[in-house]
Image (cartoon, rainbow, N blue to C red; front, top):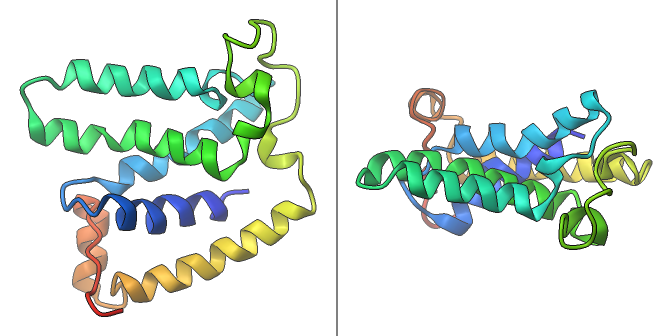
Length: 161
């Protein structure tokens, strides 16, 4: 399940935050990062609210005095929070609220992303539709806009669409 997270991070986040300095490349990588926990017998810390809050705290503390760096790196916790919402981790109470709900709940099970098969195929299809909509909404048929996305991580909404 990847397209669903790509759609959420590249389509929904820029529309919600509407910040020209938000680097959606950071959001995209962070939204996909928790899926990598499947390689280590996850879900682990990246599937918890504590993990996202920790990332937010690190970004806020390490970018004091540099607004530009803060806006760029803020994409990491935003992407992590986006992943938690889009994969429904909040429905796994002991995992989402770790360590408050218990410290022995990490690892050793399947990722929430893959627990809902074949429903995940429907989400992937919905993600494809969202990406197609986002392509038009952000005017990505224009090569200059695509270059700006890859080089600077910026998406600009075409007004009136």
